[in-house]
Length: 193
Image (cartoon, rainbow, N blue to C red; front, side, top):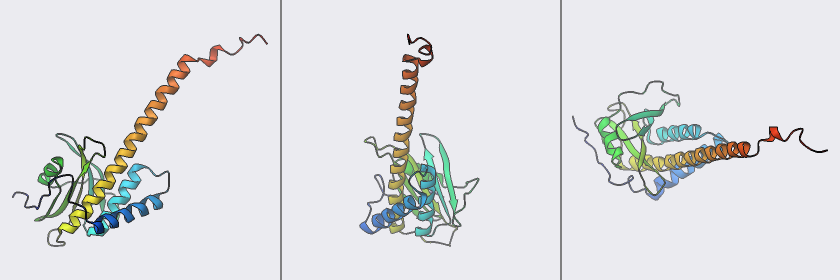
C-alpha cells in the first residue's frame, strides 16, 4: 500500500499564525525549563514532547537523514519517555521529507515534516515524524502545520549546535597553534634575573 497523503511541497506547510504562535510559545517554555546551558539534545527532546502533546500522537521521532540513510536520533512516547529501539516508521513519508515535502496521512496515522537547514542551502537535515495507533487519532492539516513549525525550530537548534561545534573546534586549533608557537616550557629558567 502506497503512502496516501496530502504532501505539501517546499520546506513545510505554510505556517499559520496560530500554529507558529503555539510552537513559538512552546519553544520558549522548553528553553526556559531546560535552562541557559541546556544541551541541544535536551531542547530537542523537550520539543518532541511538546509536539506529542499538541497533536496527541503516540510516538515522536527526530530522524537525521542523508542521501541514503535514516538514523533515529531521539525517540519519545506519549509518557515522555525515551524509546530505546524505534522501528516501524513509514519509509515513504521519510522519502517525501528527504525531498523537502511534509506529509500527513491517516492510513496509518502519521505526520512527517522535513527539518531544513537554516543556512542558505536549505538542505534537508532530517525529519520530525509522529505517528499514532490506527483508529486512535485522525490527523489534520493543522496538525501538520504545527509539526512543520516544530521542525523549523529544530532546524534552528541544530544550526546553533553546529555553529557552537565549529567555534569550539576553531578555538581548540587556535590554542594548539598558540601553544606550539609560544612554547612556555622553554622560557622557565632562562631569565637573566
